[in-house]
Structure formats: structure tokens, C-alpha cells
Image 1 (cartoon, rainbow, N blue to C red):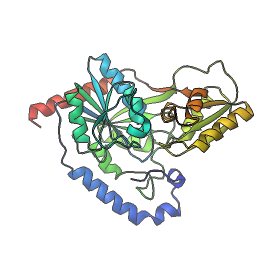
Image 2: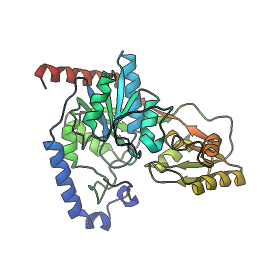
Image 3: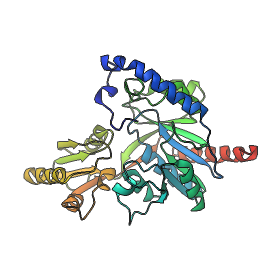
Image 4: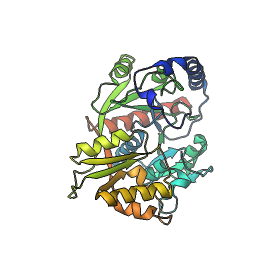
Length: 343
């Protein structure tokens, strides 16, 4: 899988997308067959897969967190399952936020572990079994929709309503991970995040196919703080513009932005540059929680940047507040039926 999405993926399809069409066809053919023919292992607890149609962030992590919170209100003990992308550990690991760093387990698992039991494992079947032995009675899988060898009882595909599916081409000509018809066939429901219209055509197709449709927004927790200085906003996520838009919607003035690749580990020079730019221009530093966890105190000026940078926390707020509970209930019921069938 491509680690960084080139900008042309997110604009109208041009000569580059069309020139890569033969490779996209091959990629899509293989990806579709792998999804359709995969032999998926089962575990004795419900599994919800939170995935997306495309490469790049669509809001999976805050969505997974919203489901875990809903599960706890229903008396369940949720556990997160992640591959630990960006981390160095290649063994099944229960994430410990007091011990592990982003370089060990990845940035997203550290955020998930704040909320609930979290296990990282390159082999998701082993990770799921570890969660069961640790007492989880509901597993929320962060990503893995197109490739996991686990049977999931409910597949929720998250789509950003502003980015949609980009130019609509499959990798490497575009951001789509597998043929849309195949993905829709394996999906249980779609979650449209935001108020844009770039996902509307796909939403209509999903609705016609009988898939449940949920809608929500990713919103900052709390309003603008007392510090009203102009901002130097920096982010190393799949869609930095989404973060900058959130900052502006909070009523803050962005004087400067610095964007980095998704899951980026910051060098000493980059850290020093951010601190020096803010100091020189009297700017307030702002970043995402995902970026904040990648700053490791004790490594040069990383601790100083972490201390001087404010974090914008976000959460998923559903148009229908009952949506997360409905998703949990559907997954639990599907798992019950699976067990009755002996699957």
C-alpha cells in the first residue's frame, strides 16, 4: 500500500490517473479477489471493523473511539485492534501509554489506548485472540477492511464528505483501495463525516444497495480558548487541511501552517524550526493529538515543543445520537447469529 497519497489523487482525474489505469486495473483485480476469496478466522466476541474506501485518513480513529464509548455505556468491555502502523514492534503487544512511545506502537494506538484496552499486531487474528484473553467482549478493528483475515460482524466504512473518493481511480492512479462494488458488497453501513457533497453519489449507491447510512461531524471539543494570538498550525496527518479548517472554524487566525507526511516522526531540525518560527513571530503553536503523541520528551527539544504546543482535541458527533448504540447492537446481534450457525 502506498504510504503517502499524491495530490493528484484528490483532484479531477487527469492524464496521470488515466496513464496509470492499466496498473489500477491489475491492482483492483487482485484486491477484489482477495476480499472475495479470503478465508476469515473467527473469535467468540463481536468484531466491528472501522474502515474506509480510500488510502488516507477519513476519520476512522475518532469514529472507533466514539463506538468504544457507546459500548461502555452498554456495559461492554471494548478492545481496539490495530496493526500499529508507524511503530517498530512486530510482536503482539498490549499498548501501555505510560511505557510505549509512538515509535514503538504507532501514534493511533496510543490515542486509542487512552480510551480502552488496545492491542497491536501485524497479524490481526493473533491480535484479536489476545484481546479476548485480556477480557474484551467487543473488538473494534481500526482499519483492515480490505485485507484482514478476520471475520468481522459489522463493517462501518467512513467517508469524508469533502474529499469523497478523490478522482475515483484505484491505486496507483487514485486513492481507492479496491473496486467500489466489491467494497460495498462487504460493507454493513457507511458513515458520512461532514457537510460536503463529494460523497453523495457513493452514499446514494450504498443506500440503493440496502446499506445503513449514518451521518456525523468531527468537531473540536470545547470552543476557542482565551489565548487569541495568531496561530502557527502544524500537522503530520493524511489531510492537514482538515485540521487547519477546524482551527479556522473555531474562530482562530492562522498566520502560518506547516504540513508533514502522515505518521511523520519529527527531526531535531524540524522541531527547532517550529519553535523558532513561533518565537520570532509571536505565534501560538497548535497541532493535533495524533501529532502530539509523536513528540518524545527527552529527545532534544521535543519536550519543549510538546509543552509549548496546544492540542485541538476532536470527537465524532452523530446527527442521530443513537447511531453508535445502533451500530453496537447490530454487531452484537450479528455475532450471536454467527455463533448459532456455528461459524
